[in-house]
Length: 143
Image 1 (cartoon, helix red, strand yellow):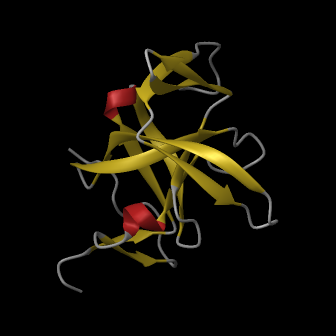
Image 2: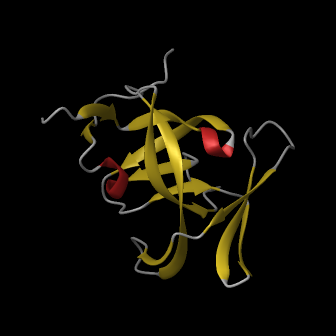
């Protein structure tokens, strides 16, 4: 196992640089990239640099919406399981699991129709974690 930690099929994670805590995330080894729900996303060009802006509701029971801006790390063409291609704008941030911070490459996407607001893909999972699909929430941030 080479010191890899075990995570379940779902986890509760924090994104402290975004001010988001206790986010329910689905682990998806079939997805290459990780994604976070946002209600609206736009990409702007400022002085030759691309930035992605996501409008995120940190609590679905609240009307409060955060406007988060990150420099685009990379553009990537993603093909859905339905065969449709779209461009995703990847940015870098940190995710807290097992009370430890990890670098993560994320993109924004409207996941309103999905059960979980966040998806952790295999680019993040690889070399760090093993997935036990019979378990849930093994990496909770217990202090």
